[in-house]
Length: 85
Image 1 (cartoon, rainbow, N blue to C red):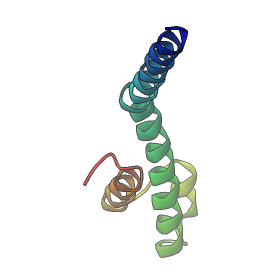
Image 2: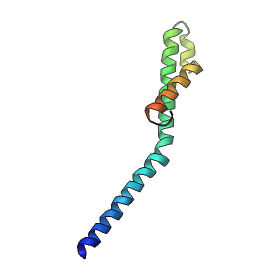
Image 3: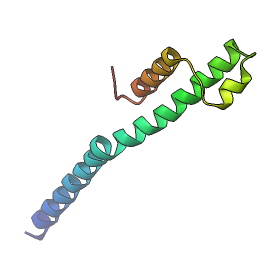
Image 4: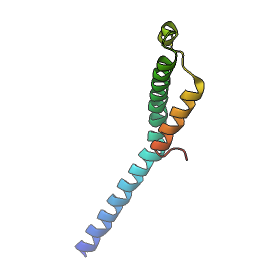
């Protein structure tokens, strides 16, 4: 009888743990992933802008980048994290 109760308690704990992990992945992680991908995409697109337009160094300091490069790196980062297909 006590073994059955222990099994039931263990299964409930396992279910709670799985539920918590799913909650973290689907509710908490997406905003964190979007924020980090945004920062990475801006940084990479600015680096590419710097490579292509090295004579326009003043604009890089202002945060100028090519939007198509930003979108490419942002979507790539999201795909790497499994957020987009």
